[in-house]
Picture 1: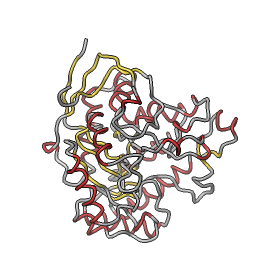
Picture 2: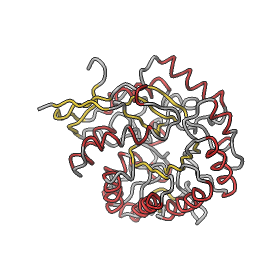
Picture 3: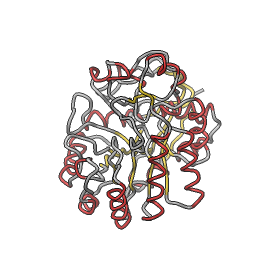
Length: 368
């Protein structure tokens, strides 16, 4: 029997709309349509556009595009930590904050230079803004061009470059040390390893102002189950193993992690060359609520209200000036199984491995 629940508006603090830059993959209008279809009241766009969002003008560009779309979903741009996302010079955080940047991140790139990152965190702390970090450092060796997957049977069979756990944990350790020094609020994006989760747990027990997010794909899938050289399953950070997935789920249930999609659309040709040569990322806005409800509520026994808080109250706290009263509620229907129809997505992109999977929980949108 179908039941309907209503919650404070769900917020996705990690989406890529490729606008400006790659309209074939996603525009602001198509991205917001996907967000509305997915049940979200607000989204935060990442700054790794072309050009990178490191100026007030580009924040205004995105907001103007959102208004022009007529979407009821609120769009709040985040802004770069460093100029051009090059990691060499801190961006003009003060003017970006004044223009309404949700928070600061170089998502897609890790700020490797300790001094640059410390300066950015000190300035962000003075502004009362969160710093969000794509926690993958290559100081220990390897590169994102040649290391593309976690250790698993498929990686060994195909001879693919393996991404060690330390790529994530070394990055988190460095940033936690800077959090202690600067007092800046720190958010770890798309965490993927059990070891990384334990670092965040320990930091929260210590009282550091640290949060982190888990994506639907890291909560549902594992590298242990991969059988084919299919780049629909390639993302950064990569899928973890079964132990990583189990710890991510425990951390969400414990309130250590919130949800975010890392919605990452790509044109089909950029995802057609297997793990070694394809782009990272998966579209996720239109499947996030069904997936997280299944894995956390139905499979892990998480309370529905706690599940909803991980999509609403927890992510909302990252965004400067975002009030629940300003957002439309999110409504869901449970008990009507429906299969994922990738061809019917509102997103312009189809880089998604969920086609045909059936879920029992779906968002309700206006007039549905």
